[in-house]
Amino acid sequence: MKLGYDPRYPSVDDLRRKARKRIPGFAFDYLDGGCNEEINLRKNTEELRAIELMPRYIRPFSGANMEVSLFGQRYQAPFGIAPVGLQGLIWPGAPQILARAAFHHQIPFVLSTVSTATIEEIANITEGQAWFQLYHPVEDSLRDQLLQRAADAGYRVLVILADVPTFGYRNKEIKNGLAMPPRMTWRNIRQIISRPHWAIQTLLHGQPRFQTLLPYIPKGLNMHHLGLFMNSTFNGRLNDEKLKRLRDKWKHKLVIKGMANPDDVEKCIELGLDGIIVSNHGGRQLDAGPSSIKALQQIAPLFKGKIKIMMDSGLRSGTDIARALACGAEFVFLGRTFMYGVAALGKRGGEHTIVILKRQLQQIMEQLGCEKIEDLQERVISG
Image (tube, rainbow, N blue to C red; front, side, top):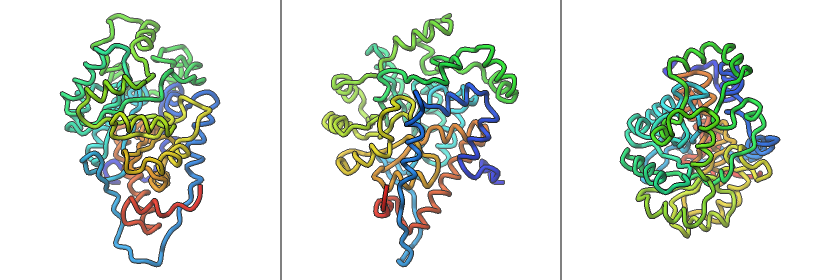
């Protein structure tokens, strides 16, 4: 068995099943669930997998190379690790595990403002190669402090989140008392007792906290008042002025995540942003909206070459990655997929997940006869 690779779990579906058995139900629901009736959660993957690709067999082929350049950085593969909040709740030390794996495999890791590791720690692990995702604060002073910390730590790509103007209505989280932040109920405690390995690891690491935000959170808040503090501190609704100020203050690459509407993309280009991530937040925010792949198919033909176009939401395999790239994405991100890996395999989970995605993508590129990532766009036949 190679370091980080476990042949008992050759697919992300295998990792998901293992993760469900290994972590408490409330943690799995937080990771796995979507908003409202979870329609868009299912559509993201189902509509992506409706895309068909045509192979070309009788032609010269010198091998497949999945390396790509993005924002001046060369990456070994055209995918990265998407930001996920409260990662340490799902598995202790998850952001550190994933950041190390990303750095080892030369793919980007994106740290969320509400993850459970600090800006500085992840920058140290990745030697400044990680990206930072910003939940926009209400107060300009907090925004400026977070931006300065990210710049000082060496981050060169800032991702501003657009698709959380309000927190999603998530039935499972409400039932579990995990609306934001998590609180323990007797039901949740029983689930913890039934997952002793998770409980021991959490005890060793300590209760998961919003580590980047700890300097700004008043001491001594109970769970209720901490929730009120978070809701009053961050306002995810963006407008022209907020984006203009961010563009003026952030001197490196600026990406906006959560795009679905071509009009919004046009505005981002006018404001001088460097990239977009077409996304519906993994089906966790708007159940009545389009799947990410449908939005990408509308956006990519309109704006190719005008701004870097990326995508997340719904991708669970190397074949899914190939489909998204074939539909016009220049790069993709996966969130739940990597968290399933860490929840299933702990410290080995990040390495293992990257390896299987690389192997799957390499295989489909060879099968289709694609020598480089751009060739995938010539293979779409339906969907």
